[in-house]
Amino acid sequence: MTDTSHQFAAIEKVTPAIALADARISRWSAGLMAERRLVCEFDGTQWVIAVDKRYVARESTFEAALHSAYAMTRALRALDQVRAA
Image 1 (cartoon, rainbow, N blue to C red):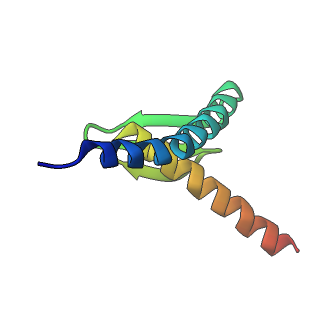
Image 2: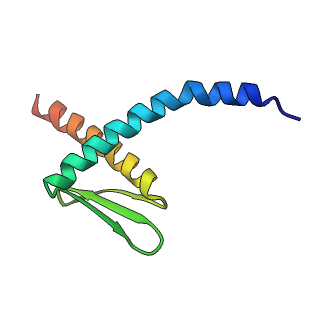
Image 3: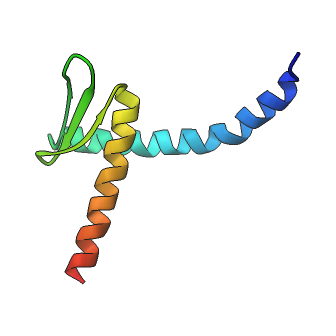
């Protein structure tokens, strides 16, 4: 038998970080959708996400695709800044 109090304690430690990340990604995606810069498509097996007409993520779940798209756009923006410097 497992000790569920340890499991709940671990979940409570992780949940605030996940909630902050999800809120940040929700604001990011809402802003892009309002500007019509974000396209989300389901091709029958995977979610495909494009930002500014550039495909940035392909995942089996929408949430994973959105998180991947967020990470990829941040990485691409950082790379663009380094190249410009």
